[in-house]
Every structure is written in structure tokens, then in C-alpha cells.
Image 1 (cartoon, helix red, strand yellow):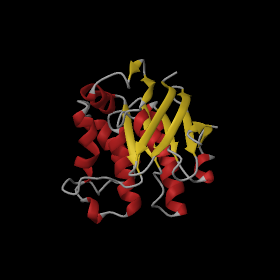
Image 2 (image 1 turned 90 degrees about the horizontal axis):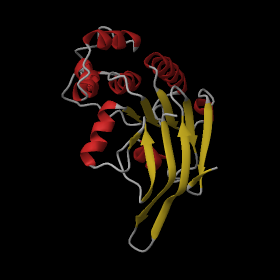
Image 3 (image 1 turned 45 degrees about the vertical axis):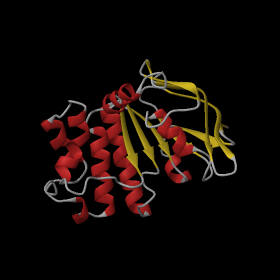
Length: 218
């Protein structure tokens, strides 16, 4: 077992009410497993993903990743976990506009102390970006930008790749190509893969499907 979440609760206070988003979420992900997380809009999928990826903390409950207590550590510990153990891909590409393709791809690996020129060049080729290394994000198509974001997440060879609607801004043909590429690279790296998606078609490409409903895994 690579990832385990136990009894996660998370709520947010609005001006006139408390919104209970997660109400006792339990889940596990094995090493090398691919899992789709589905659910209605507002069901808490992104909140859960952020907690699992050490970007946020629950009100209560526990997360362990590769034997490390994610929820029990401090901000510095969570930052270290994000650098060394996880990669994240979002619907918005979140590339650094002032960095070219290669430097965007290298960014996470450099932060993790795992910048490997040979692997970076191999990733560029696998991503279909050979010849684009010196271009900037604004010079790329949406599909190309998402490929760079995927490369950035996988450059440090993380144990777990988390993705939040990674094909949400892409057309069907590009979505299929990006998903196939992501799954192939995840397999090559040996990472587990947990993806939030609204698309049944995208979910069907992964090995297991979970549904978040009423704040819990159904």
C-alpha cells in the first residue's frame, strides 16, 4: 500500500453556515495502481486531492504516503513530501510564463534535487516536444502546455502522480492522446496515479474507479 487516508473530515465556514465537504473519507492506493476519482461538482474531489497531495490539511483524520505521516508533519515536512514523493497536474497548466519549455519541465526536479538531463531529454521526446524546448508557454497550444505540465510533474520520478481534471480544457482527440501518454509515462516511472475527472470515458481508462458522494467514498 502506497497511500492511505483514514476518516478525513474537512469543512469550510461561509458567512452564514459551515459547509461540510469531507465527512469521513477512507481510501487506499497501491503502488503502481491507477485510480479515477469521480463525483458531482462541489462534492469535494479537489479538496480531497489537495489533502492527499500535502497541499492542504484536514480538520481531522490521517494520510500516510510511502510510510510517512503526511497530516502529522509541519509545513516544511509537507513541502518535502510534495517535492520528493508527489507530482501534480491541474486543469490549468500553471506553467511559469517567464521560463521556456525545458526550464518549466526541469523546475520540480530541480526543487527535489533530482535534475537528470538524460531523463529530461527523454521526457521531451516522449512528450512530442522535441524542437520546442526554447519556446515559452504562450507560444504553445493547450495540448502542448499540458504535456509540459505532465513532464514537470514526472521529471522527479515521484511515487504518486495526482491529477485534477487534467484534460478538462482539451478537445476529445487531444484528451485521449494526453491520457494515453500520461498512463504510459506513469507506468514507465513506476508511480501510482490518482485522477479527479468528470468524464466517464477518461475514468474507464484507469484501473479502478472511486466515487465521492455526500462527503464520503461511495
